[in-house]
Image 1 (cartoon, rainbow, N blue to C red):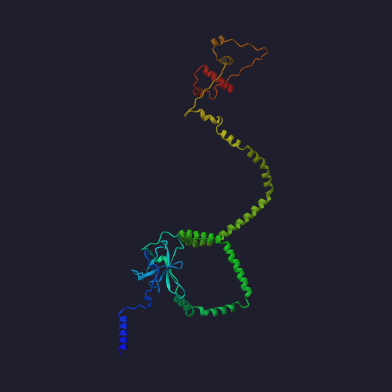
Image 2 (cartoon, helix red, strand yellow; image 1 turned 90 degrees about the vertical axis):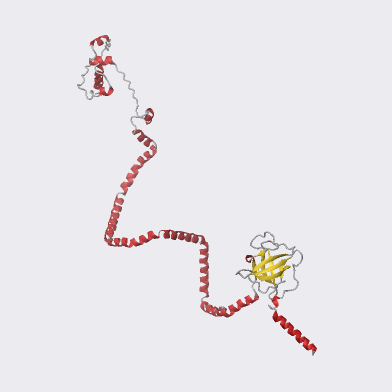
Length: 394
C-alpha cells in the first residue's frame, strides 16, 4: 500500500507542477547542443516576418554547413510584430555585411534552420560583425508544406479545376470538323503577328506621333471649340449660296473649255515665238555681267563711276581753259579797234584763195544776255567775243 500511495502522490505533484507553469508545447523546448557556442563567437540579430516553428538551438548554416545556432527568438517592438532571431556564429566564419538570411528546412518534413548566403543582386561588401542586424529587406522564407497543401485544396475544391473537363469537351466539339480552317487561321495569325513584329518600330513611331497630335489638340481645345461652334454658321452660308457657287463653277468650266481651245489653236504660233526668242535670250545670257554694268554706268552719265572720289565735301571745283585767237576773231568780225588792228600784222594772202564773205551775226543772240552773268564776263570786247562764240555755235 505504501508504494501505491507514493506513486499517486508523485503523479499528483507532477500534475500540480505542470498546471502551475505555462507550457507552450514541445516546440518550446530548446534542442540540446548547437554549434557556434565556442569562445569568440559573434552574435547577429535577424528580422523575419514569420519564423513558423523555428526553435532555439536550431542550426545556422552557410552552404549547408552548420556554422552556428539560434540563441533566442522574440517579438520585435512596435506595431510590425516581426520576429527577432538572435544567432551565434563561429568566429572563423567570414560573411559580408550585406549578407542575406533565409528560413529553410532540411527535408519536406524536416527541421527548420537559418541559412546565411552572400548577396546575389549586388556585390559583397564589408564584413558581418558582432551586434549587426539583418533587416527584413534581406530576409526570406520558403513556402511551407501546409501552405502548399492548403493552396492545392483551394484549387481542387473552390477553384476552376473541376471545369477543365467541361472546357476540354466543349473545345473538342467546337473544333471537330474544322481542323483545317483552324490550322489556316493559326497560320494567318502567325503571319499577321510576324508582320506586326517587323513593323514594331513604325507602330511605336506612329503612336508617338499620335500622342504629340493629341497633346497639340488638347492645347488648342478652346480654338477647336470656337471652330466647331462657328462651322455650322459657315455651312449654312454656303448652303444659302449654293446656286451662286454652282453658277461660278459652271462659268469656270466654260472658261476652261475656251482656254483649252485657245491654247490648242495658238500652239504653233506660241512655239514659233518661243523659238524666235531663244537667240535673244541666249545673247542676254551671254552678256552676263556686262548688261547690269552698262545700266549702272548709264545712271552716272556723263560722269564716270569714280566721280565721287574727285568731290571732297559737298562741292566740286571746275577749271575751264579756252584757247581763243582774238586777233583772227577781231579781224573777221571788225570788233577790234583800229589802233590795235593797225599794230597787228596782216595775215599773208594765200595764193589763189577765194574771197569769202563773212555773214553778220544775228542780233540779239538768244541767251546771250544770260551767259555773261553766269560765266562772270565783263563788258566790251569780252561780250563781243561771247557773241562771236554764240554766232559760231548757231
